[in-house]
Image 1 (tube, rainbow, N blue to C red):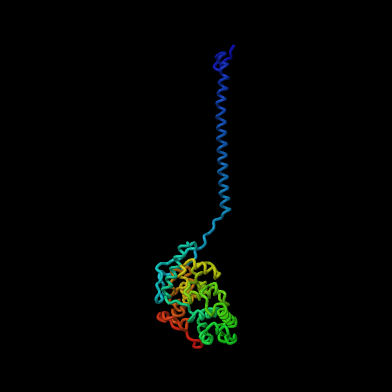
Image 2 (image 1 turned 90 degrees about the vertical axis):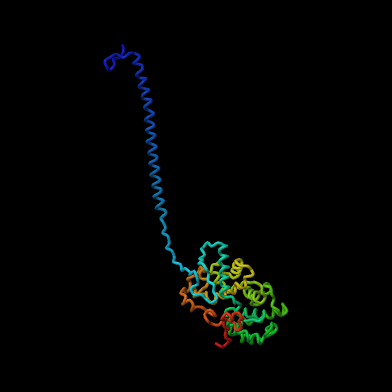
Length: 358
């Protein structure tokens, strides 16, 4: 007999067999649905955990790398577009040029050559400020100029050359008599030894003539590359760069080079200019250093190349105050030479007084 159905009827045998199969199928369909829900829940939990982890990492990174405050901008003095206190014969630069720290090689060459052109207009009569009439007098005067002024040498050499006009005369001189003449130059004993020694070398090795080659000149006692280039450039017309204290100071101040060794400075600056410019370039830079761009108090307010100078503002920028700092002919004072070239006199320069005259 079959079972009695819930509604009071009797279930057939076929119904009894079909019902368990339907329940099983229904349970099987329901199972995947639970699994999918479980997986979705797990996925959400993982995503939530990842988000929390990223937030924590971001917070940690923020704490580990605090924000640095930008340094306050340094106030820089700006050069005028034109020289504020124009000098006679000066053609001031037309635009303000402040070279950046990463100035290109091409920009440096252009700026350096422009400064030289400006200085050539300011000092068209620039010349060596040692009195001399021949190569022998120039090499001796240049050796004597170490650790003293050209003016003091020019006031001393007239007596020296009057008594010893040739290398042969000076080579045979009594050292004590020469020392007495050279006393005003300072370091007179060492200088006496040098000038007598180089005179003997000229007589013995070069027939009493000053050689016109660098490799020969530097062999003479007391003669280094600087002295040799002064002689080559001004007595023989052969280009050379004279790296004295003024030249060293200005090329570094203008950021033409960062070198401090004279030989390296010579090489660095020589690479910026044609060889034919070297001698006049030396005169222009040295003259500017002596007259306007002084070591301690540069006259920035009276400088014709102020717009091209990265060091503008290191000195006095007020035009009237700066004008009072000018030296030599620019400030109304006599130059270094007792017998300067005519071009210098025509430009308003005045000769230096002889020794003991003031």
